[in-house]
Image (cartoon, rainbow, N blue to C red; front, side):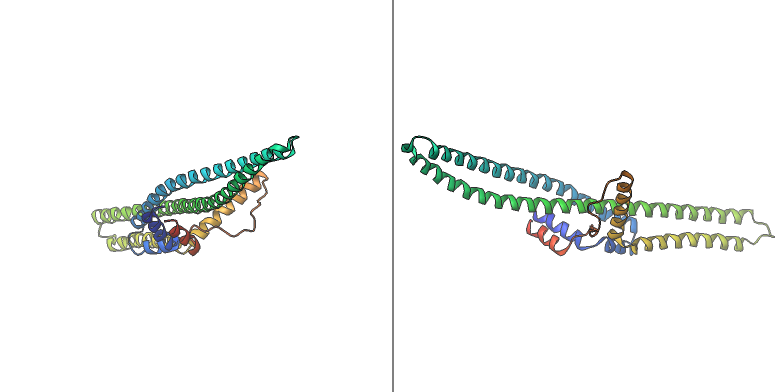
Length: 254
């Protein structure tokens, strides 16, 4: 993982989804959330390349471990054949095979360490990519919700403005234009207040933990309907944020 990508991901995950929404509410929420969404999507695209690269390294490491293992098995078989055949005069050949066997076993142990490192790196990168994907889904959902709420408020505001103008034009002396306008303005203010309250509700909803809890509940519902036992029941909810240890792994892999 490049230093630039590692730093960017670390920066994104140092802010929880709750922090991101809270910051958005202090400005233009939809614009601000869209900016964070773009940052997450750019990081995700780069992470996809890293997942592919580390996956390739993992496959290579596994293949080499298998090659060493197969060759060591072959050498053991050859040594056994030499030592158990009817001709004791060729036992010296087993010495050379044994020397090669020792070298191959050392190479195998080293390659196993390489494989272990490759597996940990691949898992760390894959987990980060998956958490980025979860955050992207959550941000998209929150942006869509705010857009829908804002659209409703905008329609109400527009209707209120039109009604106020119409009342001014059509009003007779027996109708209080000011009273009608005040009523419509009050309704418009209610729409604005509803938008503000909805945004605060998004911010106070528990962020990614609530999103994940809802996702877990939905999966449990589907498993129950299909008659599938949930082997992971009772496990802790997965967060879409990164722990300090995970951030440290990302930094180490940079």
